[in-house]
Length: 319
Image 1 (cartoon, rainbow, N blue to C red):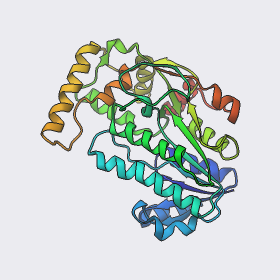
Image 2 (cartoon, helix red, strand yellow):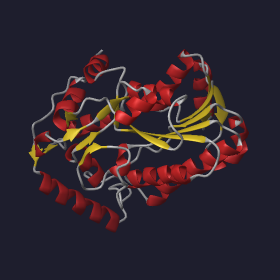
Image 3 (tube, rainbow, N blue to C red):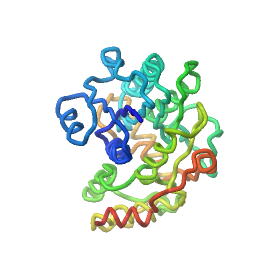
Image 4 (spheres, rainbow, N blue to C red):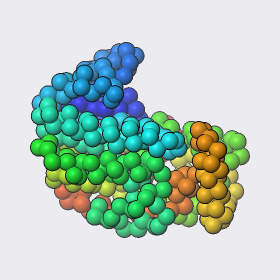
């Protein structure tokens, strides 16, 4: 297959490209600079130089691709709304339209569980669960609006939306952030870390993407998890300990943490502070909002089954 990947130099994109090449596909990757293009060539990827501000300059490279896989998105959870609206909502809409104009057969969008996160627990959630009125982060809101652009699009390209939970694995940058917080004495559990959460290993996300290249109904959304619900403390402790670091037992009651996050965000916005606050509602929800997803749909329609367990993934990270 001929496949075009955005975000190919990122955590998920790199893993995806490796598997696509290993399985004999012809892979094109969007490269914003010469260094990325050089790295792509070394791997066997055909670079398409350009960025999302000038799609019209390079969209002919999309002609008759079997699939466009849109992984690229700013990995930021704080900032001005205009950044998220432009880099996630508008980019997705423009890339989808360009794909359709160039007769791309399938458009696969990597979304996020954050589209559903506001203040309420998300337990046993299926893909038909309604969007919240306002997600608790600009990241979640922009991903939600990008999903809606795809669902409302009236073109001929076949669209699939994949909605992973927290993506982890060897090289995940979120782990570095957690370690920094521990070293600076800022890390603590909320309500003792007993909150149920769901995760998905990067190889399992890639597996779901590969399955969606040939399976899945048009404009369908699919939740992706490791199919192994855990708790915040159980998983994150194990993840951090792969780096040989012991996690402190410091704890804060949830109601105090919620009040602190709301207060901190208020003052950050009031004074127009550009740097990320030490505590945000989105960060808090990661360890404090109960989440458990039903993935029967992706099992039934795509034949998905995790190819690596949490235990196996942790062993791989230790090695």
